[in-house]
Every structure is written in structure tokens, then in C-alpha cells.
Image (cartoon, rainbow, N blue to C red; front, side, top):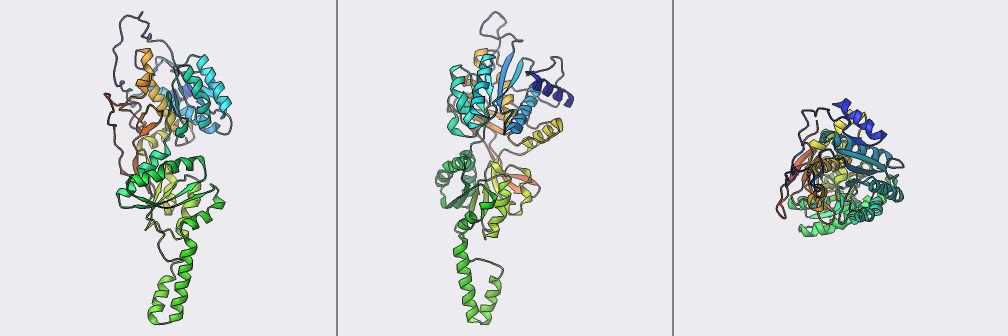
Amino acid sequence: MLRLVKYAVLCLGIALLAACSSDQKRPDQIPPVAESPAPITPSNDRSDPILAPESTPIRIALLLPLSGPAQSVGEALRDAAALALFDAYDPRLVLMPLDTKGTAIGAKEAAEAAIANQVSLVLGPLLADSVTAVAPLLREAGLPLIGFSNDRSVAGPSAYLMGFMPDQEVERITRYAIERGHERLAGIVPLSAYGDRVLQGFGPAVLNSGGEVISLVRYEPDPGLLNEPVKSLARYESRRAAYLAEVKALEALGDDLSQMLLKQLKVQETIGDVGFDALLIAEGDPLVRSLGPLLPYYEIDPDKVQFLGTGLWDEPTLGREPPLNGGWFPAPAPEAPRAFLKRFNEVYGHPAPRIATLAYDAMALAATLARNPVRAERFSRNAIESPSGFTGLDGSFRFRSNGISERHLSILQVKRNGFEVIDPAPTSFEPDRVGASFNISPATAP
């Protein structure tokens, strides 16, 4: 099987990637793609202009930064999509990787090439400004777009986003924490576009769940500039001053009881409460590894304060940071993504970034929608916006009419050797209207 995948990837790098041989046998361990929510029986009359002949190519454009600063990420997403194409085993599918160069201008040029090549669907781009650049062009051409950004401001009609929305992650984790008694929350959030999106969801999510935001500190995402924000969050100076005053008073008394209390105080540096019992840490690898140890250093005790993360915590090696052990964060159940990333590494000989699953699921979705024999309905808004959604490597999701993906997320707890699911995600959506959910990829990658 690995030889077949590598050969498919070679085809991809040279020109257009399709099923490189129509007589390749599908590996037994890869389950067949599920049927669409409303299967349509094809007419026997091949002259019917609505129905596409079985052999008509279905071109799918893949817009990614295959050069420039984000080249390595773009190439990994391309290779992940190639694996999904291989698994789909549909010789009609032709995947066209087009280089956005990581710029809005490059993305527009790639979109123009996609239109000229008469594609049926566009996957990507990766970056928010690239999505903004191409969405109007593709909308005018009647082409739906499924991008990989997590910036909801660039979504819109026929411009769908596969990315995990920070506000949805924040809503999920804060609601879970408050339901378990952690009603006084604080946040430490970077001064970045990502941090801004986290904050859009944090306050409303806490208030809607009956909690209270006690403190909020923002910081420059620079490992050399983290001490002061953490000290501020911990109220370290005032708690330290209270500690020194108490030590001085006990030393002045000099009796046996005072000496006993003084001995107990010597193991601390501060006294008093930080004021919150849960802390949202909106940072990922590698900066969270610098941030994590500073929290107990400035007397934010992880035994008293429940640490909460976002989807950026979805890095299995995070458990090597002792202060973060026991932390909670929202993410898909780890089994299927972990198996896919292992498979990717075995096939290509190098690891993939965590977001590579987005490209796999997007291509798997395209392959599933392509099974509809009615050409006009394959990639229509009704098909893409299936109310009961889809299930891929990253769990169940569906697209709303505003282009935002809505996802079911589990709550994971950080352990020394990985993650444990402590609150599973729902497995399906309650439909808004008649429909049936369906899988777009294997539950676990081979």
C-alpha cells in the first residue's frame, strides 16, 4: 500500500494527481466511502445532460502555500490530501495543487488558474488573507471554497472554513469547567489575532454558563516577556508584600506558636488567594512550555487552580511539562488523528503538523460529495451544508450557511504520556431539517 501512496504523491508533485492507475486494488483495511445523505439513483439514459458520464473527470483544486514561509505546512497539507485521494479510490477525481505563495496576490492567481481549468470545487487556501482575496472571485464563478483558516471573519456564503474556531473551543472548555464547579475564571491571552478571536468568545461563554471573569491579562508572545504578565495575573507583588509583613509580625512576637507558624510560612513566598479557581491559557507549543512553569513559580498553584487550554494544546508531548499535567482542553478524540499522523510519518518519512487532518478530511469530503451522480447537486450549498453533518478524522462537523464549521469536541486531560478523554463529544448533530449524517473518512487510519 505504501508503494501505491508514494507513487500517487509522485504524480501529484509532477502535475495533476488522480488515481494513477484505474486497476489498482483498494486495500482491505480502508472502508468504502459512505453514501451521501440523500442517494440519487442515476438514470440509464446517458444522454441526460444533468447526469455526468461515469468517466467524466472531476477536478478539485487545492490552493496552498507551496513556496514561501509557510511552504512546509502547505506541502504537508497537500500530502495529507493525497492520502485521502488514495483512500477514496475514485479514478474520476483529479486533484490540482496550486501554489498561493503564501500571499493574497498568489492566492488570486491560483484561483484564476483553478477557474481556467474548470474545477468543480476549491480546497484551501490556508491563510485568512488568501481566503479573503479569492472568495469573491470564486463566488462569481459559482465555485464553492472550503478553506483551512480559523478566522471566522473571512467566511461567507459558499466560502466555508474547515478550521477549528477559537470561540467554539473556548465555549466548550469554559462551560465544562463551570459545570464542574470552577465558576471564577481568569485568562492569560496573547496579543495576537488568535488572542483576539479567543477573547471574542471568552467573556460571553463564561457569563452564559453562569461564571465570572475575575482577571484577564494579555502578553506579547515572546518568551523573554512573560514574567511580568504572569506576576500581574498572580497578584504576586501584593501577595508577596502581605507575606513579608506576616513574617515580620511573627518574628517580632517570638513565642513558640509564632515560631511554628513562621516555620510553616517558610515553604511559601506569598499568602492570600489569587482570586480565581480556573485559568484559561490560550497558548500552544512551543511558547506554552515557557509560560507553564512560570505559573507555579509565581504561586499560581495547579493543585488549587484548574488550568484550561484551547485546541492549541493538542500536542501529545505537552504532558512532559509537569505544571500542565491535569490540565483540560477541547479537541477531537485523539485516536483517529494520532493514527493518521502515524500513518503520514510512515508514508512520507517525516511528521505532519496537527492541522494536516483538515486537508485529509476536506479531500475525503470532496470525494464523498462527488459520488452523487447528479453533477449540479454534487457540490451545491444543500450538499455541503448538510444539516446533520459529516464525520472525519477530527470527529463530526457541519457547515452553516455563514460558512463557519460547527464541530463537536471532546474534553481531554493532559497526562504525562498523552491525553485522556474525560468528556466525550457527541457523535452526531441534531438535524435542523431532514437529513442523515455520514462518514467521510475511516474512524481510524490504517
